[in-house]
Length: 115
Length: 117
Image (cartoon, each protein chain N blue to C red):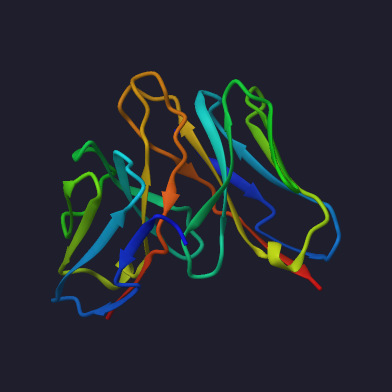
């Protein structure tokens, strides 16, 4: 059974710091991995999606990497800003039978960037 | 503002009430999802509809009843809920690929915060 773990559960950093969020998954048979951002009491916003054949994706100050063989992904945030404060969720799509559209989510890392 | 809307945003109901959550997507997608988000637990997939047909029911109790009348609308009918059903209910949509293509990104609505008294 696929399980997704995110460490740390919470993180507080000063503004301007570069930081890394970690995601690990137990089964390497995945189609893709996606990073989301969730602001308090709100829905999720997709940040980056990495296909199983890719090693990384970049968008602005965000860079996500994927090492499928070791079951790990990292989200790198450069020059963090107070507006980056949110919960970051990692989700994998298991390589299951055709027609199944399922994502397995981690519990998230709650990030606070201090001004 | 996302292309997925949910109503109501907040709902308080008693255990004997019947209510419905509504989700509408304006993105032309063909797959829609219901998720439950409880405190300190991972997001839990409840139901998946692809081309209006239910393709996933993740062992959800029968007091939750989904309905997908067309590819743009998704409902979650609630009856005789329990206090432990209090959570944020999120709807999402995606453009599910053809067989063998699973590259879709899910777009989420803002959620309905449900409190069961």
